[in-house]
Amino acid sequence: MYGIAYADKYLARNEEPRFKVIDNAPGLIPEYFTATSPITDYAGNSLDIHTKDLTSYSLLVDKKAPEIDSVEIAGNMIAADSTSYSQPSDWPEDIDKSSVFAGVGDTLTFSAMTTEKIKTSEKSSVTAELNISQNGSKAVLETEKFEDMYDGVNKRTATKITFKPITITADMTCDNSEPIRIEKINTANVVDLYNNELATQKISKNPKQQIYFDNIAPTVNVGEITGDVNSGEFCIPLNFSDGKGTVSDFDGLTASFAWCYDQDKQIPFKYAVTTSADTPSEYKESVLNNENNLAWNKFDLPVKDYYLHIKTDNSEIKNTKLYFRTEDWAGNVGEQSVDTDINIDRVAPSIALMSMNTEYENDTAKILAKVRVTDFNTDGLNVKYQLVDKGVEPTDSDWSEGLLNDGVFDFETKFDAAQKYEKEFEEVKKHVKIGWKLIKDLSVSKIAENIILYHHEKYDGSGYAFGLKKEEIPLEARIVAIADVYDALRQKRCYKESYSHEKAVEIIKNERGKHFDPMIVDIFLKNNGKFKEIFDCA
Image (cartoon, rainbow, N blue to C red; front, side, top):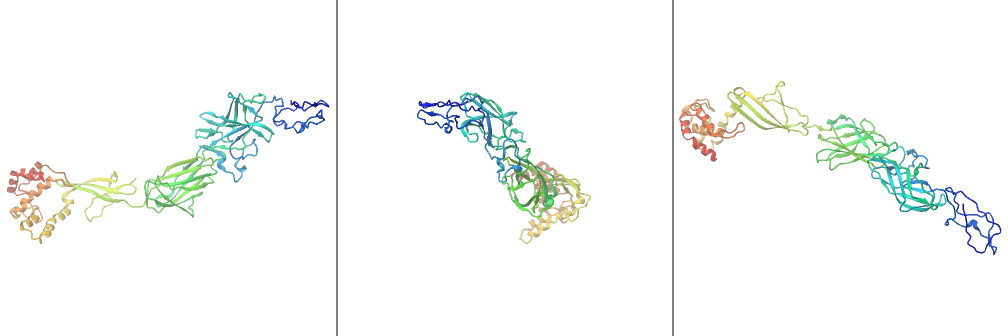
């Protein structure tokens, strides 16, 4: 019910004025009042009441409770009204699609407009429940501020309630078949100017600035590699997914990939991303780096399934990984690495003999050897070996398996010394004559020449290089023979460990009359302590 108090003390009434009674429903509060009969003062001045602006006065009786008239969210207005959801086909072509989706890290601000101006106090409370859940509970927004503003559409003053912003996190969920919206506004101790209470209200309207929830980062699945990897030309099937989201889906994704390995050297390669497994006609260039210096290659994703074609001329590549970085419209970024079975090795391994020792026992010889095998990729490397005489080709049936450990394998083989080493021993015997030829023109003494030529002769005639026996062997050579053997026994050699002094003496004693002159052996036995003293001081 509207009423007016007249301020003119000379007011006269020609006729009792009557005013219209208007139901105070939202949108029906007038800006101007119009009298149904003329009003004048004593001087006859008319009161032109129909042009009087009365909106600044509390001149009405209001029994209508305030309500939430609309809700808003900061962003692009992409819906024509608040009763339906928008779809990508409805969006303007020039819209910033990143504003249509809210992803992890995005901050949203909601607000609500009342049907009329409201009053608040310290006891007042207004919160908004969203259709977003976190840890099993609805996300609730507290009020940040109240602002009175003129509603030009409904031509009255109303109050805008702005809620505190919410930031999307990875542990939130939402029914993403509809936009993010306020489902309910809870109120307490909030009234209009006539103390009509703003009640808790379920919100059925959607904000025109519709924003869809999507906090799941896109992923990529790598299929089985096709082609000949070792040739350096192969194809990798890729399947991209944006997790969930009927609106976002995979449409609008962007992706990048990087190929890396565990070396520092940059290796050039070519690639193509296509929708077919067929060999592409055009390739782009990139480089294979280590994980600390990835070279990213970007491509767009209008569909889900792709084929990554790679071509490289490098002959040795191992321990490679593929890295993928994907981003959707909501700004969710997914990064993942995939260990690939991409190993290229077109270079034969190299073999080097580390050591080879011979141990003699009675009439047999045992060969102990260590061999290093070097290859860019030793995974699955098989080793076979065969020991043959010099100049003899190996046979197909006599190969033995070698156990490779850290690129090294050991082998042990026993031979009949008399049979297997006759040729090699003949070569060894030549060293005395070769040594003599080296010094014969150096004007050394005859004694020195005799020692070089005859120190491997044996007292019983079984020595070399001339088969001399007993006194046929120069005395100086017979003496040096004992000294040479003693030193050889005491020294550690590649084919044996060092012997003790006592063991060396025992061996020489047992060779009395065979290898050595008995007289010289007797002298050695009497003076063997001096041999030990000299050797230990060396």
